[in-house]
Image (cartoon, rainbow, N blue to C red; front, side, top):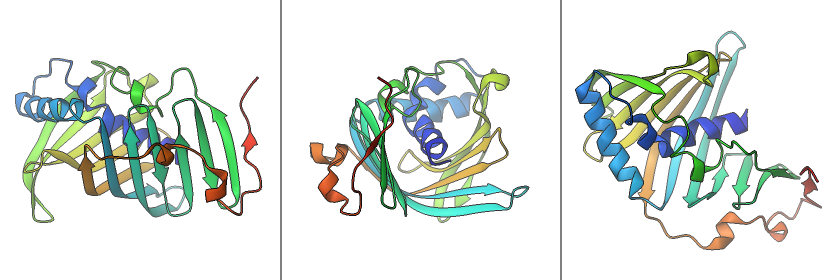
Length: 218
């Protein structure tokens, strides 16, 4: 579930530029998405603090966690309350409690931010829901639908944009498996500066991990 959580988050935050490639009938929604696209393409590194909530009423699931993600080029470091994913550009490390695992990066990897600008180009339709005020912010709410729903990972995305900052504020993803993923962005730091250590698994940083289990093939 953690991998799916981060894949949905980065698809929206880093894949905005692919959403506006198609010609949609809703000109106001397209205008907002184009501004977000232009802004996202100019950012090479960023940090986000957010609240993540996963809800599935049928399965009695309601998981709320605080999260932080640092992204630089094709590398990222994601932390939740009790788990972490580190991608160094060549491998993915998952750390939870006192266990760590090394994974190959899939060839078609939605978890790799470097690929998200070219994934699913022109595969979305969108519509403006409304412009309103939420939590004291002027926001625009846009709904996004995959053009090929049978092969999409999700049914729809509801994107709430902070109009003054022109940044995503709330993201809601309706997953095909019945889970609904909510992300509320508390702080967005564009063009952040990170050392390379943020994107490396350094075993001494995790004293209770005796050894990272290598699950890579070959």
